Image 1 (cartoon, each protein chain N blue to C red):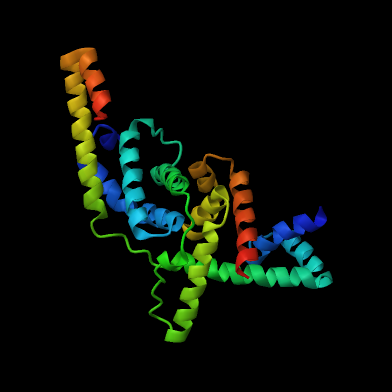
Image 2 (cartoon, each protein chain N blue to C red):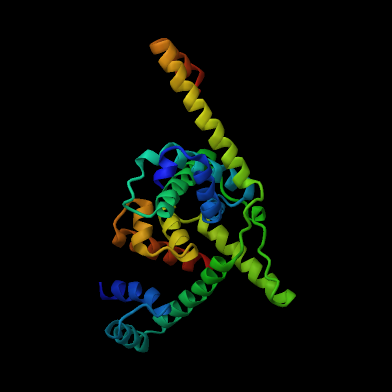
Length: 167
Length: 103
């Protein structure tokens, strides 16, 4: 990390390689389509590069980067002020299942993704980071700049709403 | 208040993330309440979906890394140019860079 802070772009390129998948996934789950997610992921890394001096190592680099990513994605959603049309979601490929089960699963997932967009942004962020990205609540709290207990509470509220919307 | 506490525990119970004492509390409440049993079933369905969503493959665009690295290079170049111009031209240079939004 010290080498990156010293301006080593090759090292930063390695960081991009290591973290591009979670950053892109978070953007995709916030914004709902690949093109916007691609732009937001780029913006997240550019901000990270510009703000590297401010990274104090109090959390992991990934958590710090995801905090920037969530902020970029939220700003982008606010700027667009539009609801995600369901058809923008490409249903995932469940190649291991039979076609009928795969279709049902894909439809259910598409509904879930749409329902995620209906959550309050902080609740959505907590659900995406904990339930979909696998961060623990301490890391979610660090990424969202809140106490661990607040992160838990946001995830709880988010799931409660999702349950009402989905089941 | 007790109902709210049980509702909160219900999510954790659905994924097995409760202590033995908490599990006993939830199970006692479930025995007395068909509504809570229905809620638990709904949470269990939701968690199945969340697990499936977490496992869903989201492919990263092939050119993402190259585009980021290119933009980082441009940003670094502009920052260096801005510093150089600021050094050479002083306040006027910095004002020009600010005006042109180069940094």
